[in-house]
Image (cartoon, rainbow, N blue to C red; front, side, top):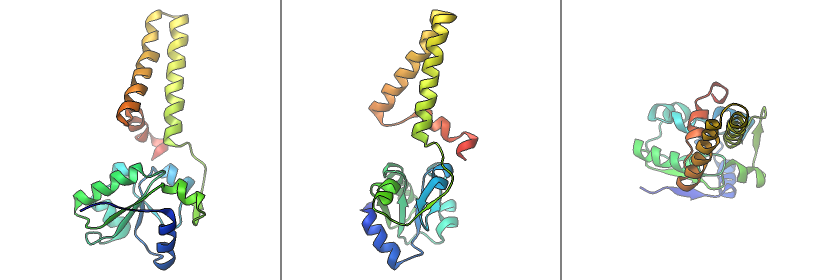
Length: 175
């Protein structure tokens, strides 16, 4: 099995001919509520299972199932997960929702939310700033906090993973 990739233009054409296309958006609910391709169903990547997938689109073993996220990375992970569940035909939408918006696909919009990436930047910056202030005002050992945050950001950049986002995903405002 291999993951097929399509562009947002190909997705637009498919949606025109197949309005009930099994399109799964694997972003967090807050991101999904903000803006998503019309007709997409939300199954966050951290909750993706054979049961949640079947509940969203019905019988999925034969496929095809199309996955989309913000830019295409999480949806590619979802494609690989779905293959491990036994879904025969999975397709990733390259460029994700951002590309679909740029290419003028039908988008449903709701309340604006802070993206997970933005939350990570706010949290990391806040912790680094707090550590610096505490190091100057309370004790120099507090300098370890911004150093720890900086090391985490370097690790995140090198491995393309983010422990802080894994933590923030579980927060109630992201559910």
